[in-house]
Length: 337
Picture 1 (cartoon, one colour):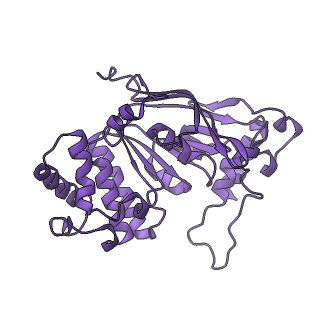
Picture 2 (tube, rainbow, N blue to C red; picture 1 turned 120 degrees about the horizontal axis):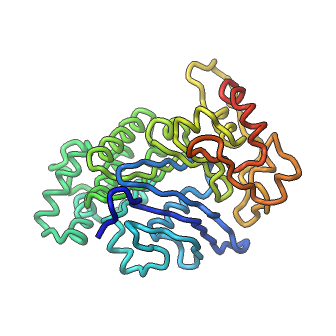
Picture 3 (tube, rainbow, N blue to C red; picture 1 turned 60 degrees about the vertical axis):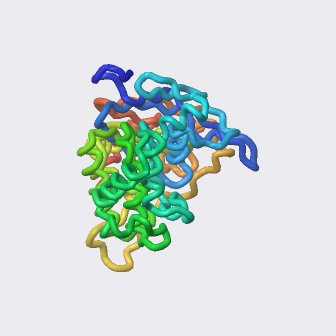
């Protein structure tokens, strides 16, 4: 039985994920909290290695067996941390679905696309083979796969990258999940197809009243597709809030650096992109203080002493930085630079 309409669909509180790596324990996610009501959309943005995908896999119950989870993840009030795999299988693909970033590895090359789209319908909805096939064709047609009825028995390698991504979207939406997680869903696609896929996902989310978590390293994608956003770095959230508010008043030096580094429309040929100096720290070597300290132009000794607390800089807009007075004063320069 679901919670009242004003209650969160998904409620994440102080989520932590520790992974055992060849270099020792790595705290891949540290103290992440957020909630989503039905129909709300949230974006996770940051460089590769910042913890975005690990967060998504934690929500899906797809982390390695040696992962250690802390905190709380509730779906309609039901605790998912330490849920048995058998119980998670009843949710995965049914209440929570995920579009993975590389469709060729997400699809089984040994099965037809029709079989793969039909599988969650047979597993979760108890459809007969005939019913599942009919619905699979309808889903493939809805996501814009040409000649769906004729190509339902084709195999993944017989489709282009954009078409394979449409198949994975059909699979994820087959059971009309409450929560859709889209992990870099357009990474391997050209710009024109990227726009089509993102528009399709947005239309389907609105049409079916789903909540969505969109993971991307592209600030433009986040700006155009979600109501709220969280900027992640070093396994934690360094800035979060309503998307418009975060872009209007970027408070963290890392967010500002990402914004400066974006490609500019109309820039002269040969113009070098601005970059953030340094590299993302290894998860096994995260510093005790601010994880961005070694790359930050505003760093002071206090930044390295402890993980900074979140400072509220606007309504629902939080920044994990002890130098928000300086960074916020510089935000106009960050936007125009």
